[in-house]
Amino acid sequence: MSYNNTDASNVVERARLRALFASYSVQRKEVEKGCVQQFRLEAAPSEKPNTASMHTTIVKGSIFTTNSEFTSYEANACKWDIKLPDAPTNLTQADLSGNVTTGTMIAFSFTIPASDGYSPITDYEYSLDNGETYVSLGSTNTIVEINDLEPATEYSITLRAINSVGAGPASSPLVVSTDSTPSAPRSLSLSSRTTTSISVGFLTPSSDGGEPITNYQYILDDESWISFSPETTSSPITITGLEQGTPHTIQLRAVNSVGAGTASSVFYATTLDVPTAPQIVSASSSTNTSIDLSFTAPSSDGGSTITNYEYSLNNGSSWNPISPASAISPVTITGLTTGVEYTIKLRAVNIVGSGAPSISFVASVQTGPSGNLFTSPATNNNVTVVAQSPFEGGGNSYSFNGTSSYLTVGTDNSWDLGTADFTIEWFQYQTDSNFAPRIFSIGSYPTQNIACSIEDGYFYAWFSGADSPGSVAPYKNQWVHFAIVRNSGSLQVYKNGVQVGSNLSNTTNITNNATLYFGVESDLAALSFFGGYLTNLRIVKGLAVYTGAFNVPTFALTTTASANPYGGSNTQAIPDNYTKLLFVP
Image (cartoon, rainbow, N blue to C red):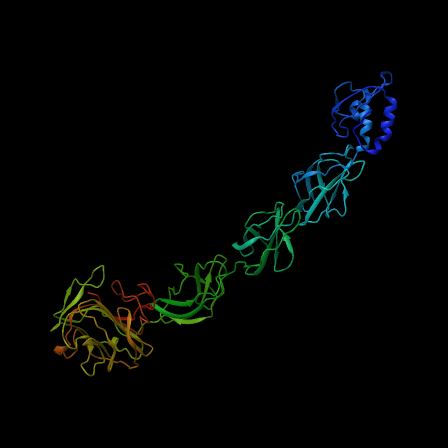
């Protein structure tokens, strides 16, 4: 017998076969297991064994060129080649019951070894520590679930097969992490609030930890975490059961099947409240039956827009709303009685209710300074009314010829300005070339108690003496608005809403009992005649209408006016009975 296998352990088997067989030849083309490539058997036909029952179970897939009944002897010749199985391959995360991983489980699949070592695989073992220790799966399933792991932990998994010889080589590692808790919610913001609740908007965590977010929790003022019930997973979330006007620190965190995630940054919010108290600054009378209250708004609106104010005239015993509603200063209280002293309080109103009251402020309706109101001249000397106006909407003016034209108003205590504030204003379009034309005058140079002139471009205000803030050029052949204001002992001159020069000190007690002239001084001196147009002349007694740069009037002046009627600032309201002269032809 000739035999290809050179393994020394074949010697006994070869000897036995030689003794058994005399002459029988078989040539093997292919053996599946690869243990014998070619052999020759010689045997007597009478000694051939019956091998049919062993053919498939022992040498599966063997192919011979002739009678295959000797296949069993080939199998006997292969028994000495059983070895360890190859390594499993293609370890891949697997979806097991809807999960590839959880916080404590990893599922994966694999491909069985290319060779089982000619011995059936009976088990697989896995290692989580780079092969230092292995744990039996107790199964040959190709989908594996490893449990009791730590959340948010990376594992390097290797696998090996077991057969009757022992444990085969390890697979390439599968590196995978268990699921974790979510990261922190982001960008917390105030969505809405009431007196007992706060709604917080947010962006979802950048990572859900590998598991769907199922709910959120919140913590108020570093106390304890509370889960939302019913569960919520969308923004905004609403925290209820709070106290009115109470500040809170708020944090959120997301929850998944692994647990509660990282807390958000701290967010500060306060439940709605009523406004704090306003502060009454001043009170003035715009009519004989009303008071205008100027005030400073509350330092806090309570988190809700102030919609109106309420006032009390009896130190807070009863309250009435401002009507029509107003949320800005000043507000007007109507229906009052002249000369009655009122103890006034003010409070703001928002959606929550009425706020804290101001400190009491005592005021009464003023009757206005002494004197009468003049709306037309007493005498007219050669002055005509023409359709000339500084306003876009048109209007009329008094036309003065520069040689003989003037107007007068009779003697009246309206011109007794005393030491109080006052405002004299007008529009002019000057065309004359006289040296010292007077716009208005009581008395004659140099003892004029009230007068105004422009001499060689310089503006002069005469109030028991001449004061000049400086030049007002250019001023001829154009419409110009002038205003002379005494405010707390300082005299200011304004040209087109801008102060000319600096303040002039003036505390003169101005008393008059003479005729007021317009367009000339009272002695009718030729050099004092005004030529051109005058309109909208107004004298306000007891009030500095302008307290700084202001918007020039854009429509006809009136005897009473609200604050800043032309926009801008620094224009005071004019109450009833303060205007003593208003010429609007």
